[in-house]
Length: 226
Image (tube, one colour):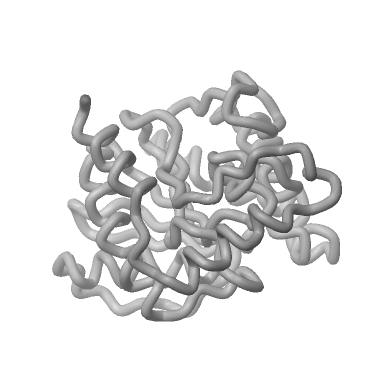
């Protein structure tokens, strides 16, 4: 077993945050009517994609009836389809949808992970839960040797990756989160790019449109070809 696979097994078995354990398992027990015949994953989620990829995408956490149901982050909900459609248009995914773990989706030159590995109530993890998961984020990112650009989806992901880098000796000041921000850092740190999260709340209100996410991914491509 590779070090990354071993870490992912450890992540899946984690039960360090009692509130999150109770919530993720409760959601799986009650289910949503549309998914009443599904067997929910109801465990923490590791990242997925190309471990040799140059783009690392960091999200917030699994959705209660998305990743918490399907067993893969950004899978089985509208956020996943919105993100994957954009990644497909940009050449980072082989298909524009993300429905299940066996749907044939392959990421190209990209890896997706999250600041928090369990679905949190109201999509709001506590600061302690984010700190607890940071150890997994640190170990996982250390096993992705070719990362040149990190795309943070939302403020929580942006803060989580920046806080991790500050722990790892980055001395730069953290800028205010802003959609489209591109932060160039000195080696060995990757470039940090920020986007609004592709949550239903953001995409249905027009706060984040497909064109806006396409523009962000175009900036990512520019940084990868520099």
